[in-house]
Image (cartoon, rainbow, N blue to C red):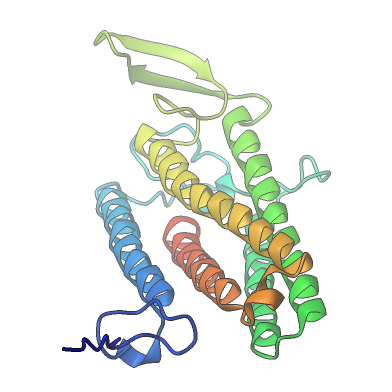
Length: 258
């Protein structure tokens, strides 16, 4: 009696798929990345919906532009809060810096596309070049976000006199500089809480992406993917990076424009 062993549904490229036909001709790794991104879409969507719900519960301020800060009753106007730019102290440049951040992230997405395309051509030098540019774009974005957080926490030079209820239930009147999770000079505490949480959660994703980009850049540079015969890892990391960029577009729209 003889026994014949058969292998069903294995990927001809890597022999790792054992679940029948490959859905949409996608590898196991890419499918898992898509599943992860889908779950993350639901997470970010829940945060942004919560932001919108809290935002509409506060009336928008329609008074003089130079006197809205410090009101706990009105939601701050983003272009009046985020109007600073490095080395241009005292100038009113509404949303210019955050627009620059958005441009940097979108450009890094373009260089990521070029890196993936080079990987399809098995062009090691081009993959390394475009991965380096993408990595630099991610690091620059994180640096810009760190500066924005620092400026938001520091606040205006003169601060703002606020009257609010502290943790003990007492009414406190004091000069508040910048923002924290309890009170901020720009308006309701919820504004600062949502800013730190949503932009911080996105920044956490970008930080993970930067580590993944560095790993792919290094492995491409030393020839790991070339020896494997394919650059699929670059493509999977590219999916994650495009997702991070797309989420930022929604964060920018919800938080800074609405």
